Length: 215
Image 1 (cartoon, one colour):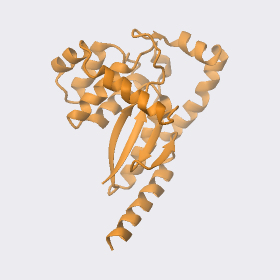
Image 2 (tube, rainbow, N blue to C red):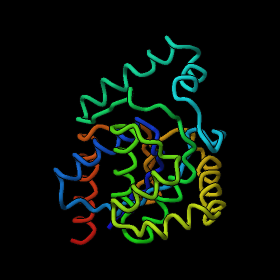
Image 3 (cartoon, rainbow, N blue to C red):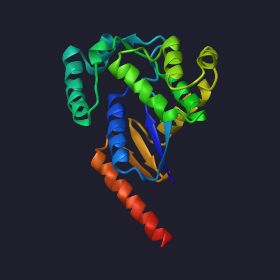
């Protein structure tokens, strides 16, 4: 197997689109060699713990209402192309995602990391749920097979908070400044929501290289 490390944030629309495109490639190449692991990167590390009103946040980030609308046009176009459903009008809060990243980490310990990532994307972008809210996160955890009571206890504590922040900081120190970012075999870096065709080509090349090495 070849390690595919993915840096992403549950509130990043390009990460959601990028995952959909990667999923399409993996479905087309079921014998792919990737072992996938997800890693934390907060788009908004300075977001207040309680989050912010979504509209106010976007207008602040993009310099007003027109800027916010313009920024979302390409997102909607690429989401439609990738077959990703975005219900942005349902989103009322821009959350702090530190706890969501803790949840992804804990899911990984139980072999449920990718289903957790998928559930968080779906909850935020399709259902408009606040993925910074502890009760919401506990319910999402339960939906992918984690013990809800255990997750509630962990979220109420500081468990793994420092580790997640340190991993985020380490990624930035290594030059990551946007997500999604993909690291193949700890060697090759791809940034952005790559087309499914690009992933299929990469998979084909890796499989061929493996054959050559074994022959």
